[in-house]
Image (tube, rainbow, N blue to C red; front, side, top):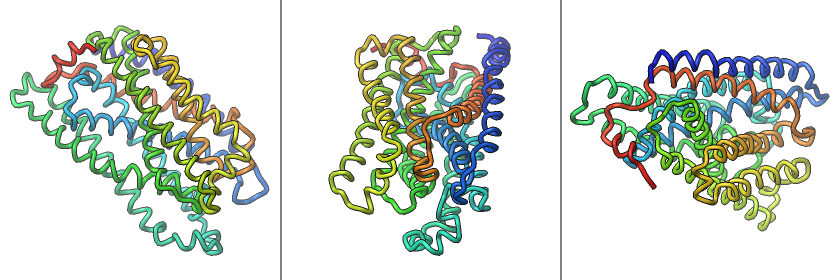
Length: 404
């Protein structure tokens, strides 16, 4: 399809929606900070800051997991996904923006503008024996790890994207040199990501509940971001096909994305339930503290997250026909998307707002709209900057004729 027409459609239609979402979200965030007040100095405006953090992390995690999925396709030398690589790449291009939002929030936390991380407060760290005992892991060492995560993730993401675009500039790539570069990069990225996905989850999410620990938490966060990314990519593919793009993407490729959504939903459920069940069964005081607050003040949210992200995709995506039905995939994908946003709310809110949380409100949705608008704008910009179909790829023809 003509690139000029492609750019025109992206800038004149979908991006208009992104601006509207950003505007609604921005106004909501301003109102949220003006209205959210609490007498406890450590919870002063913390619901507002927690919501801003949730949105920043959720969409950053989607782009990071998309980069992981892209690297995985190269490392495994998968052919089926070749025709949708540009969609996956476009989602990864939000990563620098997502990490910038995260870094800004980290800096503001260090400056005591908010209290998302208790260990960043010198007074709490000084008087809390558990936190003071963990300060060797935090402090400057935490900042070094954070910077290294961001540099490594961005380097691999940009290199994978650059090699993919550079291959298209050639009339013909006889030796498939750029592809083999990405195969090596993808393999190394899997090694780096295997470590940093868990350690960053400990540093950025688990440390909100500084007293608690879990050996399963890193995998739990990884599975959540992976299913969120798969869902986002699938929704984009279906939406583009409905607009008349990606005409070479077969129904079988969309079916495979549906299978990924179905499978990783079960992986997330296994980790979600196992983490809870093992701690509940052992009933060790220092372990159950994490779930006590959630069970007392977030029980409805806990059950909603579980059933929306497990029972719903299991029932709706079990049959082959449902995975090949565009309406079903869009509908189920949208529900899963919001379900995992609620999952991040459940991870963050109890450690920042505690029992002061009063349930889902316009605050959560307003923040979601703000980041969603930015995400849509960035991803569609990335889609418009390159042909939607890769050119010089050794598995392209196999992908175009993919059938299952």
